[in-house]
Length: 422
Ligand code: NAP
Ligand code: G4F
Image 1 (spheres, rainbow, N blue to C red):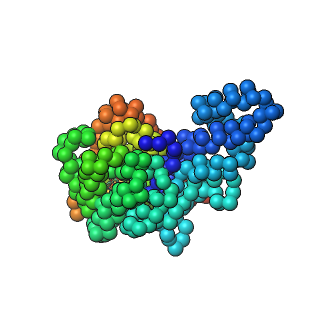
Image 2 (cartoon, rainbow, N blue to C red):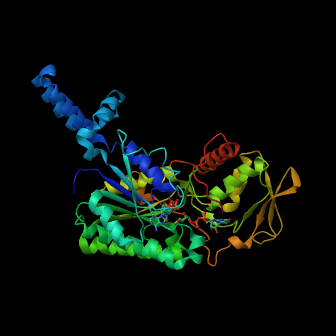
């Protein structure tokens, strides 16, 4: 393994990809740029500073570079002289799918034109279904860490597009692993695979941990199960540093709007502002272990800092129903939901407790799944003990942050990071 730090993220335009790119840039993946620039400056001006001071400085800039890099006083120098060590500046790379309109809304705040100084994020067109393209990108970028977050990630949609889901989410991982081997980087790269709690499906024990048997319940989960095992096989067969992160649901204001949490918080904001009347949902009794995406990308990073690859569950250790999420989200805009009708049927509805003629939530069977995952509850003990990782955003805080963000967006006081609609 090398001490270069060059990360490549597939799925960088998605929720997790955007938080991870932010995290890696924040973590100072440009550390060596700072030290190199400063060394060059001191060597060039050594007569000015004197030999002794220069040697001392070089010594400290190698060993204390992380702290030097974070000092704002050095930022103008780093930006001005970055071309002396351009190589080290190209630290975070992302693969973006070609689209007829911009799909980079979640990372636009990180992206700068390549002709500018101090560029930290580089984007490449690519697709997990195109092996030649993946070999080309991996061979030229020569990453030291790959985070494979790209996927057709919607469970319900996977029933409509099972073959594509298998290709992208299952075989796509095989393509990535073989691209690493083709590029001759199997001893250089640490690889993270975005595995999922959906693998537990029809759960065989509660709570679920790394040792719980899998029982996938959707084409999405079956594809991800192939990905999980091909990774384990390549790890054992070729001694590669490959890690599965079995992540339970994690949400944020950047969550896609067709996932249930964001669908709810968007609707709550629009109903509050009088733009919509009713929110239509499927199974209100499904239970999920919901954390915050920002916490979970920190866990992904920690997994790849380990010397030995392994598989880890990331979860909060708490579970809540969709119904509870709905109640809490409406409560944040001052609306109390009262449930009426036969629970668990399409007859059930949620009305405004202060004006029962206002039907705010209805059940639409269009959102039911052919096979459902009723209960997910993770046991994150291994991640806590080995990585020192814990989920730090409580459920109430997560719901509140999402509602406030969507309310601000609907009122036009905050930007809309993407324009997808359910
Ligand atoms: P997301 O917001 O749906 O993002 C998915 C990303 O994958 C997007 O950047 C998307 O590009 C990209 N993508 C889709 N098809 C691709 C293809 N054929 N080739 C290359 N890229 C492709 O998902 P997320 O919530 O960030 O989740 C990230 C990963 O973690 C996914 O693999 C997901 O299955 C997994 N996961 C998520 C959770 C969760 O609760 N969020 C839990 C467990 C596992 P576009 O922007 O162009 O669509
Ligand atoms: O928000 P969801 O669509 O997420 P789901 O199916 O749990 O999958 C997410 O988490 C997985 C990790 O466990 C990831 F691997 C996956 O990529 C994705 O990020 O649905 C959550 C629950 C389900 O039980 C669903 O049936 O909410 C229920 N639900 C009820 N009404 C609904 C709706 N889900 C959606 N999307 N839309 C509804 O109207």
